[in-house]
Image 1 (spheres, protein in one colour):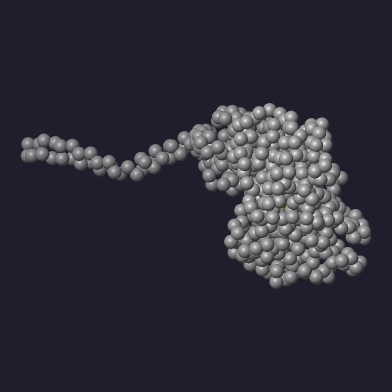
Image 2 (cartoon, protein in one colour; image 1 turned 135 degrees about the vertical axis):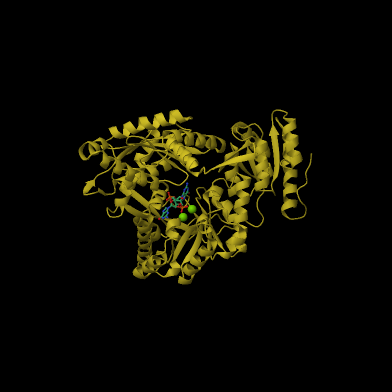
Length: 610
Ligand code: C2E
Ligand code: MG
Ligand code: MG
C-alpha cells in the first residue's frame, strides 16, 4: 500500500488528510510489463532479450567452472506452408505445441527461447560431453515427429537444428548464436529433419556413431557376431584350465569392429541385453560340446556388462542358458568389473550370492583399476581376481607395477582367492608372475583369442605351457652384464672367463629386465651411459625388483654426483671407472658374489659400501 498524509490548517484546528492506495494492481501491471519485455506473448517462453541474458549468465558460470555449453538453433521445416494454407491461427497453435514439446526435451535449468517466427533457441548449460548435445537434438527430432492433430488436421512436424558448443566453437553470446544459426542452414541443406554441429569433426563422430548403431541393431539377426576363446593356463602345471569368451563383430560395411568400440554403444542403447544373452548361451553350448567330445572339462568365463548385471532378467537368462546347454554351473564363470558392483554394494552382494548359490564361479575383472577397498572385497563372494593388464605390462621393469602385482597376489591369497594375470605377452612377465605366486595367466604369450575351430585344435594337441625347469638348489653364480657396446661385453667376458660364472649379457636396460625375470641373477654389472634408460636408473629399479642382487655401475666418465647418490640410496654397491683394470674387475665381481651368497643364505643383509 501507498499512504500519503497532508496536513491542512483550518480555522477550527489541524486536519490531516490521509490517502491510502492499494498498489497490488499496479505491481501486477509492472510485473506484466516486465514479463512481456522478456517473454514471448504467444508461447510464454523467454524471448531473445532474456535468452541473451541467460546465455551470458551461463557463460560466466561455465568459464568459472570450466563447463561446456551447447546452443541449439531450432527451425521448423515448412512452417510457412502451415501458415499459408491453414491460416495464422493454426500456425500459432502449432507453435504453442512445439514450445511445449521442446521444453519437455530439456532439463529445468536449460533455457528454451523463441527468437520469433518459427525459430527457437535452446541453451544446454553444464554439458558433460560435446556429443551429449547430439542426444538432446535427437530427442527433439523424435519428439516433434510424434503425430500431432489440431482440430481435424493431422500435421506432420519436423525441424532442422544447428548446434554450436562453448568453448570449442565460440566464446561469446554473439558467436555462439551465429554459428548455431549457420549450422542450422547446413541441416536444412542436408534434407531437413536432422541436426548439424558447427564443426565437421563432431558431425563425423555423430555420423559414425549413428552408422554403427544402425548396423549393430541388425548384427544379431544377420549372424555377424561370433565368439572367440582365449585360453587360461594354470602356472603350477602349465595346463589349460579355462577360457574367456570374447565377442567379435564382423560387419560387411564396417569390417571387424573391436569390442572396445561397440560394447559401450551396445551398453548405451540397451542392445547389450540380447547380445549378452547370445554370448552367454553360445559360450555355455560350446563348453558343453567340448566336454561331450571328452576333452578335459574347462571353465568358460563370460564377461558381463554393467547394464546386463543390473538387468532384472539376468538370473533367469543365466539359469536358462545353463539348463538348455546342460552345462554344469561350476564350469561357468562370470567376469564382473569392480565399478559394476560398487554402484550399489548391498544389491550387488545379494545378486552375487544368488549366482553363487546357483553354483557358477565369479571373477573380478580388470582388478586394480577401480576403487574397491579391501574390506568391501571381502564381502563379495568372488572366487578369482583378474589382475589388470596395466600392471602386467611393465611388471618386469617398473618397480611400481611389480609392487602392485605382488600386493594383489598376496592380498588375494589371504582372502582365499585365485589370481589370474591378464595380458601376459612375454616369457619374462610369465616368470616374474610365477615366481611371485600368481596362479594363472591369460595372454598372447600362450595364445591369442581364437575361433572355436582353432581352440579345438589347441585342445586336440593338448597344448601346454612349457615351464622353465626349476633351478638346482645350488644355483650357479650368474652375472648379468649390461652395456650398449658389444666390444666391452666381449672384453669383460674374456677377463672373467676362467672364474666359472654363468654370464648373461644385454645391450640395453630393457633386455636386462627380460633376463632378470627369466634367470636367477646374483650380480648385475651395468654401464652408466646407454641410450634409453641409463645405468643408475636401471640399477635403482633392479634394486626394487630384485633387492637380493648385488649391483655394480661402471662408467667411462666420472659422473661422480649421480653415482654417489645412487650408492647412498643403496641402489649401487660399487662404482668402477672404465677402462677397468682386469684384476680389479675380477676381484670386485668375486667379492660381489660373496656378498650375494651371504645375503641369500640369510646370514646378513646387503652391506652398503661407499
Ligand atoms: P577384458 O574382459 O578385460 O578382456 C581381455 C582383453 O584383453 C581382450 O580384448 C583380449 O583380447 C585382450 N588380451 C588378451 N591377452 C592379451 C595380451 O597378451 N596383450 C594385449 N594387449 N591384450 C590381450 P578384446 O577381446 O578386445 O576385448 C576387450 C574388452 O571388451 C574386454 O576386456 C571386455 O571388457 C569387453 N568384451 C569382450 N567380449 C565381451 C562380451 O562378450 N561381453 C561384454 N560385456 N564385454 C565383452
Ligand atoms: Mg574379461
Ligand atoms: Mg580384463
